[in-house]
Image (cartoon, rainbow, N blue to C red; front, side, top):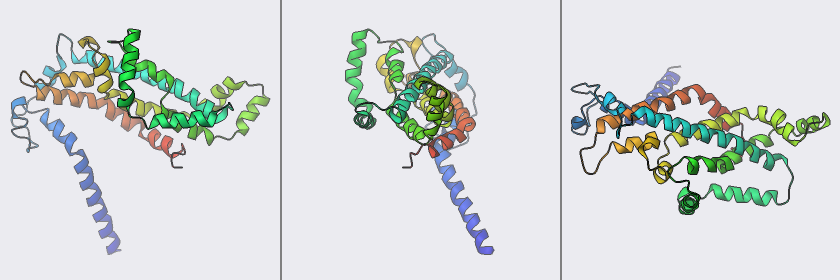
Length: 279
């Protein structure tokens, strides 16, 4: 009994210490947002703000160029919304096709899709930029959100694996009842893949919310900037960087991420554990 209590105590000390280690950057960020900007790196080793100040939050919220930080949050919400719509519609339809429909070269095209999963974004960045430039889409959200309506290989693979776990007998029963292919997808498959769709939505939110490279490439006007670009604007190579305002707004932009995680974390675990990604 005593031995098990010691193991129990050691386990919680180890897990607690590891949790503090992982959370330390966030704690440091939070504490620094309450320090004066000139003191942040001078007192970087201290987790107690001295003096304690809230001035960084109103300063950061004022934004720059005549645009408040609320504008950048609104732009990011619009960006995330269209990415969610694009990924959920396109990935579910494409996954249904690979998992349920028979067509010539299905295995070949599925393999090609998996190969694109291994391509880093930097490989396609330049040809995509040239295409969107020729279309006149620069300085708009189109280059960022339109590709989402053509699917994402990781989410397609995830949904394909999930759909393959659904018995085909359900499709056959629906066919006997007179349902066509789209009705099978809409009325039978779609309600059953909600956990995988939730996982798709959550990861899309995370990856879009902090996306910096895409907006930097295609957005030029400050009124269209996203939060990741706005945070970067607090830093300057020519004048004094406003670290306090940047850290304060970094904490503000973390709030939606934490809210989404704590509300939908069970869907992430459920979606991944039941998609067949394990094999």
